[in-house]
Length: 242
Image (cartoon, rainbow, N blue to C red; front, top):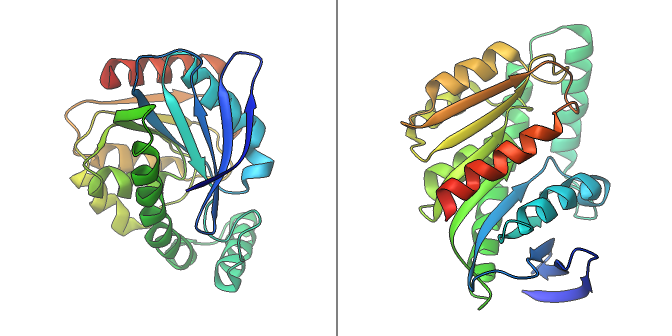
């Protein structure tokens, strides 16, 4: 893990960009916190530079509660090498959604390879960040892609709780994988999300094996998540990571 930039933000949060091998990422650590600070993995749908304002706002809100936060770029997104197969699947998915056609086969081509590559990268990032003296457990996950969050919650025992954004398609097989998730969950669903299957999202929530799971559904499209949901997510993570 090699830090490449460092800046102290106006709220006192320390923001450091890094590379882990060929994977770019950003780490935020709070201005003041018990050492070591709990850690939140901040997920997003890819294109970290484009997503930076939203991701950084979530991370800084988390840091204000005394947590460290880290994010990395997804495989094939941003400045990372592109995947021709993934790019074609994304184009096919957009076309199928616009035409109202079935998307199950396209989702199978797109999501499992991405999850299979992204999750070990997240685990390597977790190893590197937890080796820093200022960061420790417990660990939470917050954000998308929901497929990555599901897999991490299943295979990564260091994750104690997760906030999942139901804003992307998942293969039907991953609904079965969700039955293995047992950590406390808060799932956010935009009722009118133009890029999501509402019924599939509800079926997925029903499948989660967690004894504590909460669904927050709000009217509006994909980017219309109310600000107060961020506050609720922080309270949820604080309850389980403190």
